[in-house]
Length: 183
Image (cartoon, rainbow, N blue to C red; front, side, top):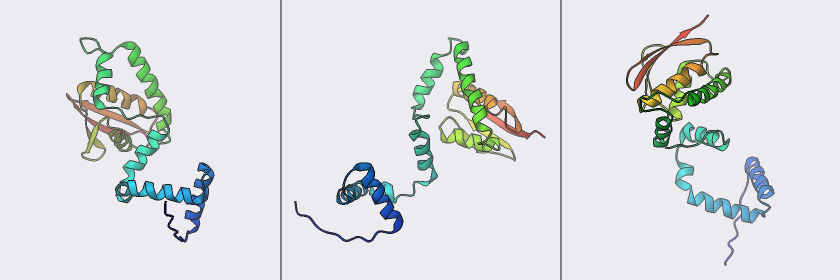
């Protein structure tokens, strides 16, 4: 192996990053820099692309272990499995889902100021698509009637402690949600 020497000037942030990496890995500076360059070369397109805020949000959600990526077909399977032949959901499932919704109601008090922010978040999670209409009204599109039922119930319960109420008009796979401020 022929070694090629390179002299590099580091700013304070880069020097601190190098120091942290050598501490974390237990490797010398040369090995850390070799690995970093190899990683950068292998991921150049991703590193140079404008991933926008979505990639950072996905990373934040997934790295905490609280959220998972789930194929939408699996979600439909789960929802189909917890209903009987008439489409009525199992009461034990409804109780469990309501417990999750109630927990989120507490979490959302400090997180969302209006229904638009919550709908945007749920859209980002892949549960629904949102189209703003007039004022505080949103057209929400769901991939299926069972997901519409499940997420509409979740939304109603999870916003109960927020400073507004919702009017919800449902159709087959879409709903209109209008926010009304409570004084």
